Length: 250
Length: 226
Image (tube, rainbow over all chains, first blue to last red; front, top):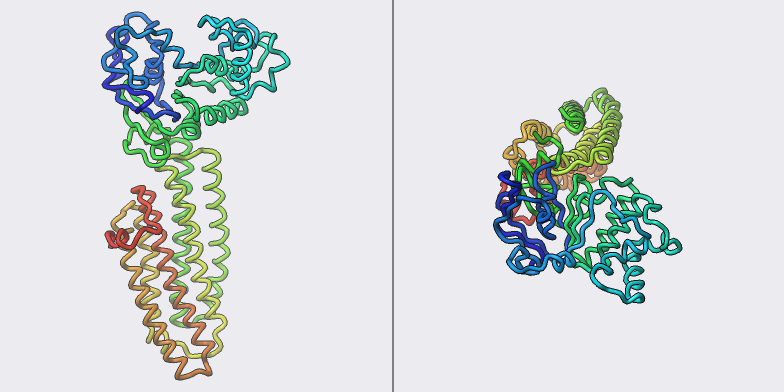
């Protein structure tokens, strides 16, 4: 069964159509890169999977978006439960104005977990998963703002992992980071793939090539090409994809 | 034109220069063999240095494009193909140089009859034509022309096989001159290998233009093209 799927999805901001008949099926434990020029709909598409677009007024969706075969836009779906399945990481690291420990514990606390030992263990596991533990284990009570940009982004990933999602959505997670921090996040994506299904929006073609198994190219709200990354970057089937990835667009 | 397009145009121009140089070397070697002309042989050996240095320059330029521009899709296939074509062309250049060395070392043995009997010049002409035709195929991105090379390479293989039988017969008849006969046979083999190099170039062109990999393809698949 596919982990994530969209069937004939249209999405509208008011009267403006942002996505047109998008059909994508994503296997579990894979990394899928969404690429395309600004305004092509790739971030809108990413946010369909945790219903983040619901927070924007006057939007409309047609078609089906499925996680583990269940339509997440069906009536009666509990959005809070859905969001526990789908961790999200944003373009700029956005730690809360709290300690390093509390940033990672936050998701657990808002979900009503009070067991101190359980929280401590989960925080440690999550920080270890993002390979940040050795760097922060002696300053867990310090503010998250004391960390570097790259460390903050890994902390945000640890925060997303703490609630044990099965899907991680990443919206340009390294665009504000230096090459070393970028390499660490990319390495992390590779490591996390064995446990999670990851969808990443990126403007960096080389990053899409390095981290993803499949790539979807969006243009003006349409899915132009969706195929194995190796195929798309060596022998794209659609000329528009070739023009975009080789930088000869427009 | 974007930066990468400028770099690619320069790279293409360099490979065409390499092609012209190697083609001229082969044609000079053919004339030199027909006349056993040591003057022309010297000229070929002097130009061989140019072939080698141009090969190194093209290698370096390909490396730079990989490192600085991260080519993908058709750009990637073009740089990969040119890198390998560059090496194929250099080897064809080596074949012309081998002919020149053979002429230089010839010690008064009369090769004229053997050249005629084995159709060595005919082979040479075909080898030169293949080099020029794969170049035309590259310049016009004509894969049909590239595909025709596979069949024509077989002509060279046939001529090589016949020449071998003729030279062996001569060795049996005149064993005292076995060294001269074997040196000549080595040249014939190299001409046959020049056809193999042109065939490899044709495969690279089809890879670049159509993204099809023909290298090591089963015979049945190769036959489809013939």
